[in-house]
Amino acid sequence: MNHHFVREKRIDITRLPNGLTVATEQMPEIATATLGVWVGTGSRHEMAHEHGLSHLIEHMAFKGTARRSARQIAEDIENVGGDINAATSVEHTSYTARVLGENIDVALDVLGDILINSAFDAAELAREKSVILQEYAAVEDTPDDLIYDAFMEVAYGGQPIGRPILGTPDTIKSFDEATIRAFMAREYAPGKMVLAAAGDVDHARIVDTAERLFGGMPSVDAREPESGLYSGGERRISRKLEQATLVLGLPGLSFKDPDYYATHLFTHILGGGLTSRLWHEVRENRGLAYSIDAFHWPFSDTGLFGIGAGTAGSDVRELMDVTRECTRQATADISEIEMVRAKAQMKVALLTALETPGGRIERIARQLLSWGRIVPSDEIVLKVDALTVDQVQEAGKRLLCGDPTLAAIGPIKGLPSLEKIASGLRG
Image (tube, rainbow, N blue to C red):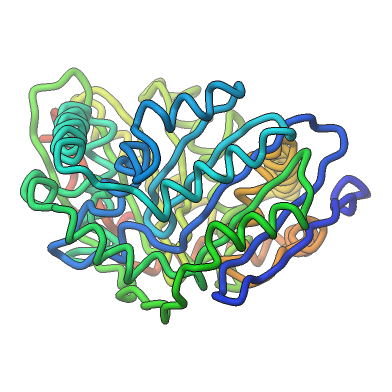
C-alpha cells in the first residue's frame, strides 16, 4: 500500500491582484517557519550581454537596500536566530529564510526589502563582481565543476540554456546598476513569482503582509525564454591531471513529457545507486572508477541525460566501452526486481524531500510555477507504480536514438572518437 502518500497536508493558495501567488502549508508539529520567494527566471532567460546577471542579482540581494545595510540584513535575520539564503538555477531564482514562527514578519519584511528596495550600490557591486570572478576562477581550477559546464555548453551549443550560470569575466565586469534594474523590471514579473511558506505559519497573515510588501509591483507580461534545442557534440580538454573526468550524454526529456517518469526509472536502474548496473560493473567488478552515476536533468521544454565518472588515463577506453555496453544492455533486459527496487527508491526520495519545511516550500513553488497547481504525491506514485518493464526499456531506447554529447578533461588520449561512441551505443 502507498498509504504514506495520501497524507497531504492542507495547502492554502491565494493569488494577489498583480499575479503574485502566495501558498502556505501549516505543519502543526513544527515550531519554525521556512519561507521564500521563487522567481520563474534563471540563467536561460538572459540575453547574450546579460550572461551571468541572474546569479549576480542573487548575490546583490544581500548587499544593502534603501533601508538596510548588508550588515543590517544579516543582523535582522540572525538576531531572531534565523538564516537566509538564495540560489540561481537554469530556470529559477529563489530567496529563502528560516525563523521561529513568531518571527515570520521579520523574515517577510527582509525578503520584501531585498527584492523591492535593493540599492545596488556601486562600491558593493564592484566588490561582489570581484567575489564572483573568484568563484569563476575556482570552477576553472576544479575539473569536476568545469566539465559539467562544458557538457551543458556542448549539449546546447550557442543557446542561453547551455551557458554556465556564473557568466564570463567579460560579462560579469560589464554589469552596472542600470543593467540590473532593466533585467529585474523585465523578468521579475509578479505573475511568475511564488511566495511559499511552511511550518508554523498563518495563511491570512502572510497574504496580508505579502499584499503590503509586493502588491505594488506592476504586472508584467512574462517573456518566454528561447526554446532549448539539443545539439550534441564534444569537448576534449587535455590537462596534466591525475584522473580523467568524463561525461557522456544524450538528449533527455522535459518534465512535462509523458515518458518522464519512465526515463527517470531507467536512469536510476542504470546508474542511480549501489545496486545500479553501472556501479556494479564499473566500480565493483572492474575497479575502473571510484564512483559512476547516471543522471537526468529535466527542464520545462527539454532535458539532458548523462553519465559521469572519473578514471585513470590508462582506463578511459575501457570505461567508455563498459559504459556503452551497460547502457545499451539496459534497454533490453531490465528485470522485475530492478523495477521494484527503483520504484521503492523513488518513493523514499519523494517522501524524504517532503520531511522538512524547506523541502515542502520548494516543491510548492516549483509545481505552481511549472503546472499552476500542486501535484499530489499519490498522483506521482500512481504513475510510477503503473510503469512496466517494457515502458522503461522503451524510454531507454528513446534516449539512445539521439546523438551523443561528450565532455572530457585530463589524460584523455585513449578516448574513442565520438562516432565510435555513438555506434557503440546503438549496437
